[in-house]
Amino acid sequence: MSFFVTILLVVGASQTYWGWRGVRLARRKIASPLLRGWVCAAIPAILVAMFVYNLGGFTRRPEAVHMTLRAALVTAPLAWWLASSMVGFLLAIPFLILAGARAVVGRWRGRDEIESPGRRDFLMRTAGVVTGAPFVGGAYGLLYGRLNLETVAQPIRLANLPAAFHGFRIAQLSDIHIGPFMTGAQIAKFAAIANAQKPDMIVLTGDFVTFDAGTQFAVVEALAGLRAPFGVYGCLGNHDTWAGVEDSITRLFAAAQVRMLRGESVEIAMGADGFNLIGVDFQSRHRFGSSPAVRRILGNIEDRIVRGRTNILLSHNPDTFDRAAALGIDLSIAGHTHGGQAALEFISPEIAPSRLATPYVAGLFQRPGGQLYVNRGIGTIGVPIRIGAPPEITVYELRRG
Image 1 (tube, rainbow, N blue to C red):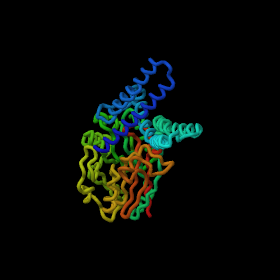
Image 2 (cartoon, rainbow, N blue to C red):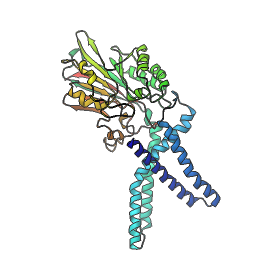
Image 3 (cartoon, rainbow, N blue to C red):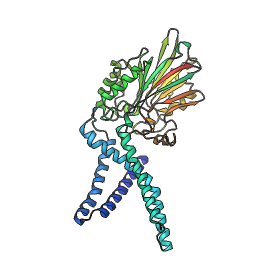
Image 4 (cartoon, rainbow, N blue to C red):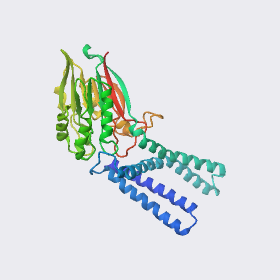
């Protein structure tokens, strides 16, 4: 709750800041007192209305599974504004502090500390470029970045992999989040791309829906075309739990020849050789939304681990990895983080919002006892924007080594 309150305070402060800038601009540029008064009154009213509307994006309400005019013309622009204005405000804070400090020093010395008009103009232009960059980046992430799919080929070396499975290929899709910005038609296209990789097996690692249970039928239909010689398997995510669709979507997937592993395991066999595939529902050591904390992580699958064989775990939450490695699970396959969704990887891989919650944001991780790969997923949550974290289909190639 405190995290949510902090976000609300930052968002509220950002809208106040941009409202203040808009009013100052109107006072400088509009000559007519009547028109200037109307504009100065309208700016805060519009910002408050947008803030309230965007709050609805985090509530449980019916969602379309195709692009609608409302989503394209109202929801998307307002979400873009909310995200971009918040980041722009955070980037403006150092300039506000600098300007305030110079003003204080200037008053103390009895003169304007920024004496040179050129220096003042440079500071203002720099602040304008820096605070305006998030709006450009947000537009890129909305219009292009969120659908710029990347297919990642990821070799995985496993010491006890049977020789028959050397070169075995597994394709992963995760974090579907069907809705107007990840439509059923788009999901079906991504599913076709996964099939085109000709994997031996396909795995799905949760968050098929967001909040609306009614969207489960469309997402299963969109993924029903997935086919692989050794089958299609999956696990459920936290949003599937929050939407209350765990049992119903499991049955729908079963009818579409997709098996959800919920504290279960299955042997993937090739003659006398094979590996053990395990799946779990969302688990966390800490309460996450309406999901309670799990006292003993992976305690429900300890007896599903087959000693002496390769064990692969499907777990939506990558934070189960520490426990999985301690249990001797060779490979964990996860999602959940969206790769940060907005991650400034071109500056540093560490700059991702998800890193505040987990060290396992995206890519391959290793520790004694096992390996983890975190897929960035294909959908979005909150705002339909991806920057530096493109949607991903991962194709693992298992190798002996």
